[in-house]
Image (cartoon, rainbow, N blue to C red; front, side, top):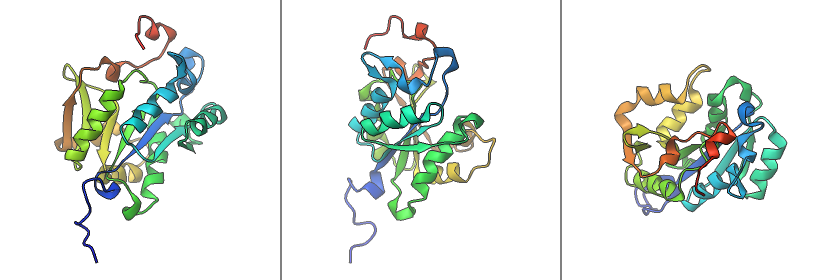
Amino acid sequence: MSSKNSKGPGSPSRTGVAGIILAAGEGRRIGGNKALLAIGGVTSLDRVTNCMLSAGCSPVTVVGGAQAESVRQEALRLGVQFALNSEWKNGQFSSLKRGVLLLSGSGARGMPAGAMIALVDLPLVRRETYQILVGTFRKFPERIVIPTYHDRRGHPIIVPREIVKRIASSPHGMTLRDIIKKHDHLVLEQAVDDTGILKDIDTEIDLKGTQF
């Protein structure tokens, strides 16, 4: 019988990274859910999803709320899971909890080593950045990996299994920032040459002058 420490470096239980894409907001300032926003010929959700998949994230789950059916159809077209957050109006953390509860509900043996959390609001993050972050996490699977650009923290981030569990059990009113602050000793900042980690798309003006 093999021991629990005998698994290779590519074992999902040791180094696997799931993906959670938060895409529940109604996007009032831009006229609709940002997941469906056309950017460079594809949707914002398409860009974020494919970046996650290119980095080896599995499974990838899209958490939707506003315009849920359209977002669900786009997620299915992209070949990833969809989870409905019926409480999306309670804020982004409610969507994050919905996503992590799916992971924690699979049981300890089925949970990946960590989860990459991405916002569909930031679709301009480079594919290479996703790959760098996953590579860093696989070297340090107990850490919270956060990208930085000129010392400014951005998204997406990767949290280890233990933090996934803490998110799942956190009370309403908590935020991801609160949880990270409590575990700041686990944070590993990964510098990247990518302004996209900071660029939240709120209006059409935010897209002007952007190179795709």
